[in-house]
Length: 190
Image (spheres, rainbow, N blue to C red):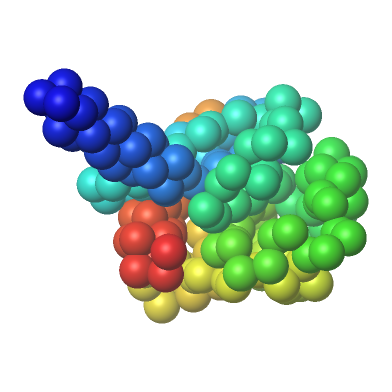
């Protein structure tokens, strides 16, 4: 009889920690990158998520994302270079692969980031295209933490003062702010 209370206690502890592990909040940060600049933005998004306690992230290119990554994520932050004023074909293919039957992505948080080679090359248009695709799936869209990142984070990477090998700090800060805001929203909503 004395062993029964001990066993019940152990069972309760394992049940509690098992529930905690199952309810972990994970953000999928995924992207396609041709030059490495969109990947750099993705890493800045991850840096923002890291600032939020109680949230973890998975960071990987779209071609490496598994269906379980999509289903298990509390939020999806998707990045693309601007490609002829559109997302890249790889990002479009990734979105097209999302399960639609029964709307399993409904009410997940969605956010976007892009990189473009110049001013007025289509950054906002591409963000809206990606946002629209997320909304078709019933996702709840979250923008960045500043008015300059209202639709997500974007970077100009090949024109004027912003041309060069590295993504400028001003754009990385927008990406970081987006990651942090999405992380905070995940904790509020779920």
